[in-house]
View (cartoon, one colour):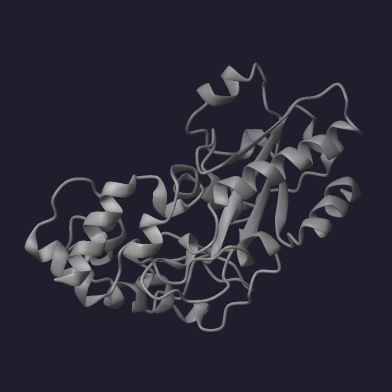
Length: 267
């Protein structure tokens, strides 16, 4: 629908789908119940974030926290649509959503499913976040499309071979990204993994090894180009205020976890 496209064109969001809410998998219906809304339509959007390859943190965490962008963007979209549909309600989500966002994006034709469990887009690879805006506007009024069959990758096995813990092949209990985010003490094996793969936050190995990510396009969204951290160091962390740390995706587990990880890298 033109009213959606004109807004998303301004936001530099190229990939989106409008879907009937009835076609989606509901995972946290209580979230819409809190809003007092019975959703009828979902607008699913891919938010590309790739800019560069940081030295010791995951690509997604180098910019300011993507939740900030999704919250602000969906708020702007809500206002934009409310001008045309003033009697209706619009609520935006990203990550903590009433629906299975990945499934919605897949049946919306926005990408295929990789063996690492990530959605892979034709232009931006798997370096995308998924945002959704739910509304009680009837789907036909917003130009909802019919769901498509879910496509999959070619199953080349590259992500499984690259995974340092073996979790993708059923041999490990946790991924390296989860290990770097865990509170408390890490055992020697976990510390060795972090040192070997030079990470103090996150892991991109299943993505960087994927042939679909061989030449990802850089995001056109300015938000992800500003205030980047390409290498997290102790002096940089020590200089961050509480507010600054809260504005980073790597800050959600708190300063202590990051201090521990940086100490591990010095051993």
